[in-house]
Structures are given as C-alpha cells and as structure tokens.
Image (tube, rainbow, N blue to C red):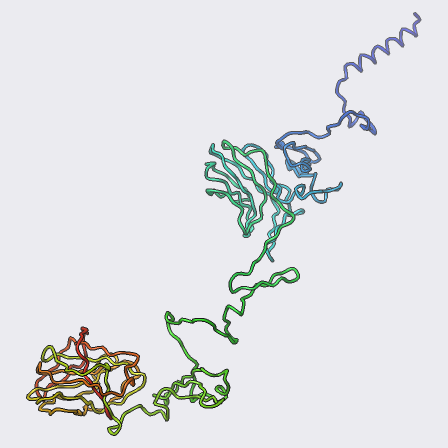
Length: 499
C-alpha cells in the first residue's frame, strides 16, 4: 500500500467514526431547505392532554383531548397558550361547523379543571346577545373541583345577566371554585328559558368526565303564542305583543262590555260627574240610552242623579232621578195626599210591646229623601186609657234628630203627632223609634197602604235598642241614640208620615 492510499483510508475511517458518533442533529444550524415531503410521518408539535405550565413565544402544542379542529395551541407570550386551530382569523380553511368555533368552547383540562371560552380575549372577544343587550367576554373562565367524591350532571350556560354559570347537581356533592364564572349547586341542573346553553358534561367520583357535549347552537327558535286577551303580530325581524281589544278594556278609548260585570267587590264605583246639569248633546240618541250623570256642585242637594232615557218616540233626554223629578226640592207628602204606609204588606193585627220603657226601632231604606214633620199612626178599638207613647226620628247612625213627647188618652182611629222640628231623611237608611210606658196593646196595623213607595225592595226590620226612653206620661222621651241593637220578630205597626 502506498503512502497516499494509507492517508485516504485513514480519512475515510475518521469520517465514518464521526458520523456514527453524531446521533442528534440541530436542524436550525445543520440543515438548509429541509423538505419532509417524502417522510412517512411528521410530528412537529409536542402532544398531550394538559397544556404545559411553561412555554416560550412560538412554541406549539397539540392538545389531544380537545374538540376536533380545536387542538393546536401556540405560545403567544411567555407561559400563555392561545388556541390556533379552529379559531377565527387564523387563516386556513376556517371552521366548517359551529362546534369548531372557539367562542365559549368548553374543554376538559384535567380531572379537576374545565376551561370555558379560553380563546376569548381583548382582540377576539366572545359576545352573546339577549334582545338589545350584548354581553362581551374578553377572558375565559375556569371551573375547578376542590372537594367531594360524588357523581352528577352539569350544565354550563350564559345567563341573561351576562354571567357564565356552572350548574352542578347536589348529588355530586362537590365543592367548586369558579374563576370568571358562577358555580351553582341545584337539585337537578336544567337549561333556563332565558339562558344560552354552552355545554353539558358530568362529574364522576368527584372528577370531571372527559366527555364534553357541545350545546352551542347557531340556529334557534322561540315561538310566541297569543294567550287569552293577547294578540301577536309578526313584523320584519320583530314581534309585536299587544292586548286584544275584543277581550281587554282600555283606558282612553271606547269599550263595549258584554256579559255579567260584577263590581260588588270594588272599593268604590265613581260615575261621571261635574258641576251643573248634564249636556243635552250627551243624551241625544239611542246609543246614549242608559248613561248616568251626577251633579257634584253644592247647589244640587237632592237633585244630582240623572239618567239618559227614551222619553218619547225616538226622543232621548236626561231624566232627574233624585229629588222627585224637579227643581232640587225634597220629596214630601202633604196632608192632603198622605196615606198609610203598610211597611209589611201583611194583614191586620196589633203590636203588643213586650215591656214598658223599652225602645223599639224600625229600620227603613229610602230610595229618595223624605221630609218628616208629623208621624201618623192608628189606634185599635177601645180606649187608649192612661197609656202613653213617644216617637223619634233617627238618622242612618241611629242618632235622634227629632221626635215627640209622650202622648196619651187617644181615641180609636188615626192620629197625627207633630215632631219637635221637621227633618229630612234619606235617601238611604233611617229609623223610626217609639216607646211606651205600658205593655197594653195600643197600636194596630192595617192593610191600607201606599204600596211599594218605601219597602218594595227592602222589607223593614224591627229591633230593640239598648238605650231606654226616659220619663213617663207626657215626659216620656226617646233616647238620644239606639245603642246596641237586638233583633225581634214583632208585628210591624202601620205608620204614615206627613209634612
């Protein structure tokens, strides 16, 4: 072997040994224009189920347990991972399904940690709209199980108040820490009607289940159905909900009430009222028939209630109901047209007081005002003898307003007793009181009557009062007030009043 051959052989041997000893290449400085097009496979990014705690800008990580299309993360700043694949604005073909979008994506990180919307940022915010309100999220949320060993269902949603809610079943018996979210333990998690579902998953033996069911939806619908008294009108992108005027009355417009309208439980019922008489133009046609009007000025005492009615063939006018039909004067009966008021409409008989010096009261309901100056009554056959009777007129509070002194030695037949001062009572309730200084049958009733003027609708009631009359004979006087009332079933005496 020549000297030159020996040198070449040695160099080749050294090169071979050098190549065998170098098992790791630094592609950054030892390669140029590397082409892996014919490689059997390439794995340029580190893989795993948990994002590394530390990273340098430019690092890549393939998260194996994330939703397909949302696996590739890039380190955008020291120790900060950002989802790259499936995110808007990352280039490539982009998402082809709603489940590939990163907005509010829920991902399993570990048995204790679930991330929600980890890609939400200032530059790529996650937005959700409720009506005209848009809630914006610039950071994600993390739900961490901190204790417990049970199992149960979990619902994650965005509430209409703009909170990410992690609703977990009480059966799981876990404690949970939420960063950027609200943990809510309930008996049975459910989707709220006013929330946006994000994901459904479960807790098993105190740990998050790795299976996440994506509930985000691109399409949704909510039907609005008209209920009783409501009508719904679809517009261009909106729905108008309003009352149905055929069922619901409205203020400020005309309403036509049908059926039975009961105001018995109302606190009060106020009719149209104003000063002076009603306008003739408001009672001029059949459509005005039945209108009611009340005068509210002080000068209208006993002449205030008007009703629109058909007063002739096709003629409609206001009729004054209160005040006897004219001029505002009180209703009264003169001596010439006075008659018996049969307050019961029953047959004849005698009223027999059960005890002397006892106050008896007759309750009467008047549809109009009555001016009382005298009280008429009837004596049965026989002499009145030494028995005396006193009368009193009482207002609606059963307080004496006028009356008579004791009267005796009266003959058989009708008698009229003048009260001390004429008084007007009604409309409404008033009371006629009387008392005796004897128990002899001294007042009779009769079938003679002006029927129905007072009592057709409201039969009278007779009762005794707790307050007794004072004096005897001509000094017999009715008490100033009835006092406590005790009902009785006595025969009602026949009375009439005259002015």
